[in-house]
Amino acid sequence: MKSTTSPDLVAGAAGPDRRFGAHMPTTGGLHHAFAAGEAVGCDVIQIFTKNPQQWRARSLTDDQITRFHAAARDSAVRCLAAHDTYLINPAAADADLLEKSRAALADELERSSVLGIPNVVMHLGAAGAAPEEEALQRLAESVAVVLERTPNATSRLLLETTAGQGSCLGYRFEHLARVLEFAAAPERLGVCFDTCHVFVAGYDLRDEESYAATMAEFDARVGLRHVRLVHANDAKRACGSRVDRHDHVGKGEIGTTAFRLLLNDGRLKEASVVLETPKEGEMDPVNLAALRAAAGVI
Figure: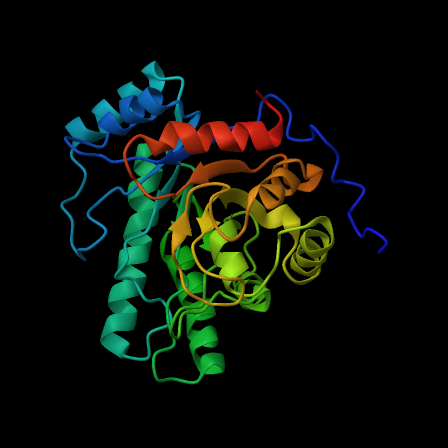
């Protein structure tokens, strides 16, 4: 069978400057995430700026901000992204929940901007009992509203590809395209490409032909230029299962070939790579080493 691999898929395209990292805890204070990242070999980190299981959070104090900025200056690790809280549903049909979600997402952008974190990764919400088309329109409107409410925010909002569990949106590439087109703010929006989510949503990545086809579809519908961050996670469940269960790099259903193809894809060379693999034992260094090996940078 003739290969459909893109000419941009060249060995070593990631280069030695490719940055790898993981989601890090903030126990004891947000600033401790930098030391935690250094300890496991991160170049970059992702954090929560508040409890992901709660709506409300105290405003950041001057001391918290000062400590975070100081830690950032003193560390070789860069805090590249914050992740929004799990409760936010920007596609909610309930008016009160919708407004609460919009306010919370705007707060996430403002908190990250104050801390100097360049990106906020957002889940795209769930339709619930509502028709998917109707929910997609609410989602697109929510993103536009949040951007309008935060004109001075410096953090970029990244739409995360999702697994499609239940009624969650974002499992089809056209969902992301719909939001990007409606919001019409390319300088303030981008995409976080999660390998596990894309795979279990039904887009295969496991060999050159399927990887090339998936990326061609993504590029045609969304645009690979919008990918600012990659969540590099293997999957415990099969392609198309729509079950969101992350696994260690190369140990799940996706396998090592997909990560080699992804991390040597010249079209994604500007996107940093962050793990969200299970925090089991001392696996962050193991998974980071697997990514670097796949990229050919060690």
